Amino acid sequence: MGVLCTTPEWASTLKDMDKDDPRRGPKLGGYRHRYFVPADLAAWDTYVSTVTAHYHDQIRVWDAWNEPYWPDFFIDHYDLQDKAARKGWCHPSDPAQAFANLMTRAHQVIKTVDPS
Image (cartoon, rainbow, N blue to C red; front, side, top):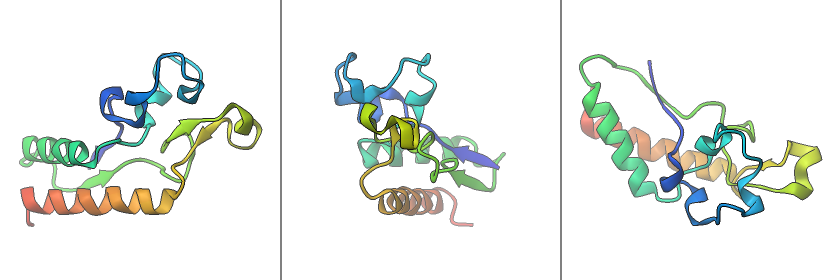
């Protein structure tokens, strides 16, 4: 199974935040920064298309994202005031809708690359 997961910083919601912006969260070697949601869903579509086309002959089943219900793995921003409740890592304002949009788009793109 292939997993389509994580977003490079330049394509995530981090891209418009200053390097010292507290919404970026603690500097953990960039570990959590890859779990910020995509800022541009067209870029997500391109990523999904490129990866699934490249591995089309080797991978037949795809999973998109990992554990989106955990604030650590589907991050919109970091909030120092909310640190006690969710370790500071916050979901998008409507995480179910944001995740559904990501899944729907991934499904459509994958089916375009491989209708089977």
